[in-house]
Structure formats: structure tokens, C-alpha cells
Image 1: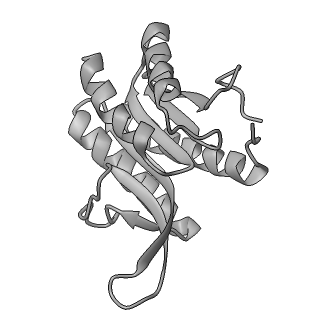
Image 2 (image 1 turned 90 degrees about the vertical axis):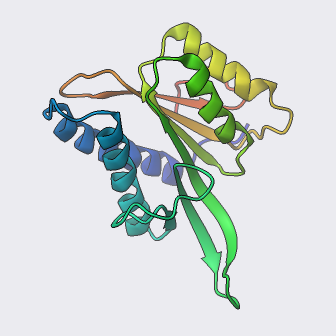
Image 3 (image 1 turned 45 degrees about the horizontal axis):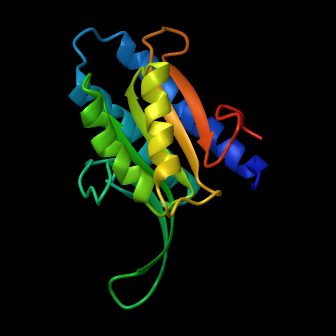
Length: 178
């Protein structure tokens, strides 16, 4: 199984850090609901993607242009319009529902996506629910050992608002980042 490179590990750390900053700010706003949380989390990660050099959908300034997933980071090469997409670095889905069926519905989009990094932002999942999502990954026939899943589960702690789990296809220790 390929290890998580230091570059990928650093990128995952940047994603977590950026998400924590916005979550700490939102945690202080008692009026912020799921819509505001989704908007601000996606905007923050879209801006991070642009800062790193990726194309992003949706565009962070307007949050318009969602394409297939709640958020993607992509690379492209210039050509006659439209440009050619050469890679998708990150696909992200966000689902705050209490109903696990709603979360799994969005998660299935990540399972089939062609991207090395796949991220789910959600409420805190129980051990059983997390196990169910890992089973969804492992049951998928076209899974790839290079895929890295980032689970950001909101736990409403003021210092560490999200609990993060990193999962690798076929990994024995799903939380270990090599």
C-alpha cells in the first residue's frame, strides 16, 4: 500500500487547520445554522485550494459554479475552450443531517469519485456509523489503494471543533497518517 507522502500529509494538515479556524469562529455564532456552516467551510477550503494553485468549484468569492460535488480542487491545461481537466486533487461532500441515510447518500459520491483526496464534513459519527462508511469504501469494486479519505466530524469543542479521521483503502489502522 502506498504511504501518505509528506506533501499529502502537509496538505491534509492545512485542510484541517483551515477548517478549524472557520469552525472556531462559527462556534461563537449561536445563530449560525447548517447553511452558514456549509457555506463558510466550503468557502474557506475553496480559498485554500486557490492559494495552493488549484482551480476550484465553486468559486470562493461568489460560491457559484458547483460542479458534481460540493467542492473540488482540480488542475487543467490550456486548450481551445474548454480547457482540459488533467487531475482532480480533492472532492468534498458536506452533510450535516442526523439521518445516516442522507450522509451515506452523499458519501457514495465520494466513493465513486476519481480523486486521491476525498473528504466528508459531517456531524460527529458514532463508531458504528464510521464503520459503515468504511464498509462502503471497501465494498466498492473499483477502489484504489492510493485513495485517502478525510473525515471531518463536528464535535462542537471550542478548541478542536472537528474530530478528524484519515482512512486509507485497505488500511489496518484507519486513523494512522504515515
